Length: 387
Image (cartoon, rainbow, N blue to C red):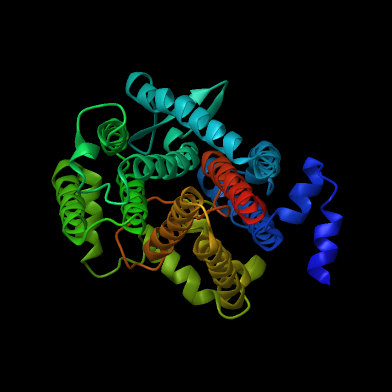
């Protein structure tokens, strides 16, 4: 009877009604909670670091800087979640077509931050194109895999016709992807390069990538890491420092100490590790939050991440459209991989990567990128469920 009632209520075909009854409200709720936690983090962890780095700044300094991004990001999330499949693709193409030139512009007039040239300034706002382009990368990759399978059948990886030099083969995508990866690697942004490459590998695996090609891609990834070790001083330094005993005065040392001394319930106003922890509001925000609010709050945040991943995985498993399957797989892989890279760095499980924690870390580009990605994903889940 409940199902019949819901179908009856959906006889009103207005866009808002379609969105309300069709959207994954649990996933939307989880995203809203993550955004709220990010607002708390901008206040509780940003103030200590701003005092250390910039001098006496108000406690709301980072929250105020993020506020315009919160407004734009929330609007983007809700509007994108109301789109149909055609508009999801259009927005994804627009996202890539805007971000690709900006990514190329990092060669011409980059904004250097901590030795990296991954930033551009647009209208007085500093943006990271590779962060904002993540939604387009996932959606267009899903569309491309679906298009190839429609043209060449399921065996798109070993079908010779799919590898001929023409616009409907693998080569246009491979050319653009390698160009993007090369730009990010040159910036250097090894962490984001690893993220893009890994997400592509997972999407290809779900699309039926043969084991031998998986081994080849793994070899290429390993070769890239070895190349980064010898080409970039900061990568060499981080990898060699990683195998040494942990320095308690290093970034990771302060992060581990912050988690350790936070206890179950946190130190609140008595927390002090965050004041000595560079990037406490960004790369190491999880450590600062645990010190401030305790291990129980830290575990609750991890459970929230798991709930989001489980919700996405369930939607991917139940997807009826291959395009939706690949797109949600990409979203799940991107979200999960970025969380793992951030937390593994914080817990001294891998060398530091400079990766934000989705929706939690301070950073407008990352926030806008994930709001658009989850908005488009919610739209595809709704379309696949009801259409």
